[in-house]
Image (tube, rainbow, N blue to C red; front, side, top):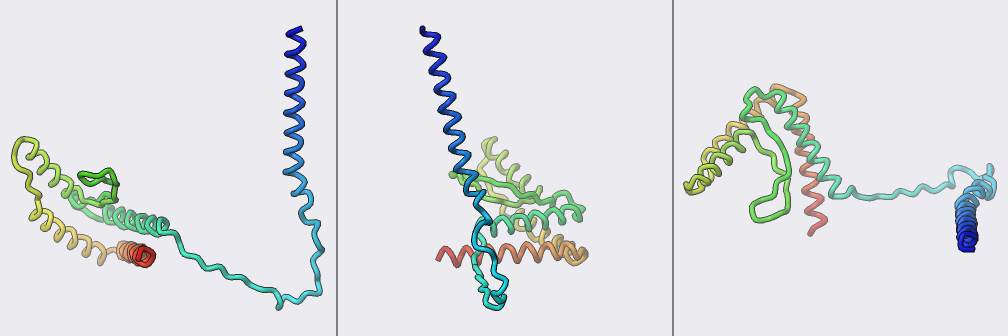
Length: 180
């Protein structure tokens, strides 16, 4: 008796599932089947009376920021390929500042990372932490000179620099406009 009831219950569930699936399929197929059955197109309507709708929008800030990051990556990849000094190899990555979990994008040379690492290692041995400001200032001057010389010698580097600058300006100006 129990077996018979289980069999009937399974059959009812199956019938309910089939009915629900069929109903769902009809709901999905019927609107599609009726497509294209509207009023036939009129050939006598002149094209000049057709209206054009122009929708203006602005690019999302995230997309503008991504465009800038992509242009910056392209610039540094080109610079790294032309650069002969390994100390000036630039890498960009996301990093959280001390005291926060919010990561920001930073682009740093190999030498800059090594200077900060050495200062941190000295601090770990008991010496006071001294930010290597003078060395970093000197490094930045040398890096700027190297990048300028490379951009003047390599036209594609100059183009990449222009694209990165334009992308950064577009992102910053739009951010400023929207956030004020």
